[in-house]
Image (cartoon, rainbow, N blue to C red; front, side, top):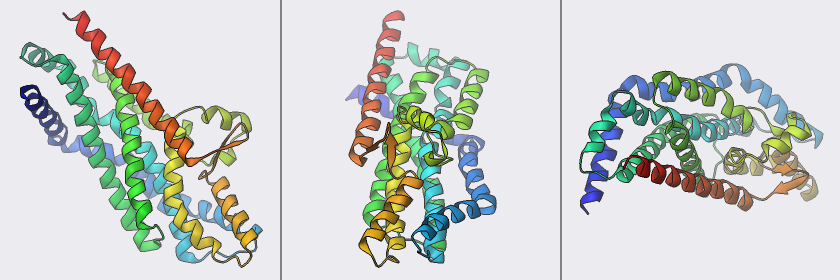
Length: 307
């Protein structure tokens, strides 16, 4: 019970340290907000034309609200799935700063287990990242409600669950990578690298259909890809159902639905095989289990070395 209270105090301390610096919180939001603004001002028409071209093949016209909404939903699935990882790397800066300014030495000489300290960083990072992601989600959902909302309540809850899965993956990955970093230059380099590259290597910024087959298969081996895939499904299902209502022939409706899902990554294929939604969750959560095991091993080894 005493150790639990110590952990709660450390979690509170780490969280307050992060939000005390308003600029740090703004920095976490700025990348997804820039993507959102770029989409609304420059890229929106490109995605609209892509959806219209697929629908035109089946002689279907998409309504304006459904068209504007589905493009925004596709963007939101990209932003949230990527930000769940990139924000985790930014918000974990407290762990690195404690090593930089030697605060960790003061914590280690106190009667607190080093395991408790490590777990408190993880939980605090998860909590901070969750707050940032929910803030981004609310902004995006206000936009979708204005241009066209066709997301059922059940999918809204699943989107929240998808975010939790993505944040868990991002927090564990950040905890492992940044446990080896103890300088401002190091954390800046890693955060910049992850922020600039992660969205591309998980297929969030460009549909897989635009990639070569070899690249699609390679990206399909990365767990982050499935964090994007599950988000795509729950953001786009309601819009696709609305779009296919315009098809009077059930076969046309099924083919149009499949064409939209294939073209915009709600369906993912690896080596020619479609990955079911359940398998996407299994791969992502299985990867989280592996990362958790690695994180625990790192904590144990470091505790042994410091005894």
